[in-house]
Length: 356
Image 1: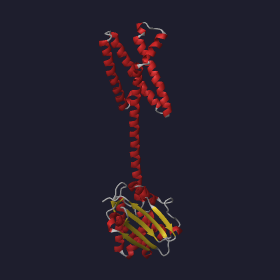
Image 2 (image 1 turned 120 degrees about the vertical axis):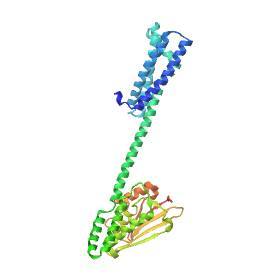
Image 3 (image 1 turned 135 degrees about the horizontal axis):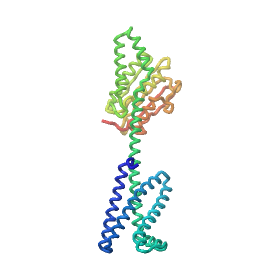
Image 4 (image 1 turned 45 degrees about the vertical axis):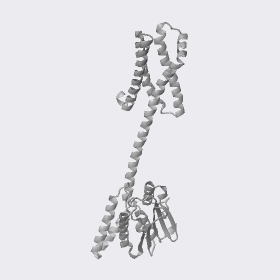
């Protein structure tokens, strides 16, 4: 049983009894030297200290038992504990100092306890209170440590999940369609097929090298989006147009990797793809008044007429992931803002804090 006791509790116990060992030593020697130079005074001090050491051990156990209950019950339990501790220590003090001297009657015991209900009572109460105080301090530190550990483990698991979601954002259908396009181009235009393979390789290299807790340059993110759009244009040809309106002053901004890709993919898949005559995807990045950068991905596709409208509440994994990552990095005001109309679909967000 003792092997399973954490070291911090053993150390706390040793600290408390060491403190009281010093107290009992000083008080016993003082009484022996100044008031009563009898040997039994030294023995009584030793006996009282031994009993106290045993009581402190049981007070720790009792406090640990009460800790599992509601606070009001703990308070009541400790009031009871203080009373019991007083009666035990008071009775032992009576036995050693009065009973052995001939005061053997019940009335003598009561008188002795009443006399202790003055200054000595505080001494006995302090023994209990200090022990419980030590227990709750250590328990608080232990609880905080456990919560921090759980928080760290949860954050680690969230990052692992986030990274898994991040790398799975490249839609499998996109991969299958791209491979089919490459297969077709091999017989028609080998150079173009090789270029498409390189672009696809760059996309997956970027995805595999991305981690949830890093920020990358806007330039790298735009190169990734350009490769994604170029591959999609092979499939949709003239039905897909892509326009960039990017203020050069915003190129310094840092953002989490693959934030824009789900927005662009959503526009292609649900806005432009199902529309017979296709449409245009527009990427706007510009500074905002007061500092910060505004991002917008819009299309003139089906809008609210699409079979699936991603409005933030019914969004797919990629959109939800982008929204949560933006909020985690830059605060709740940086979450995705979605608007769907008959004229098309628009997703926007802002980054108030710029990293230069």
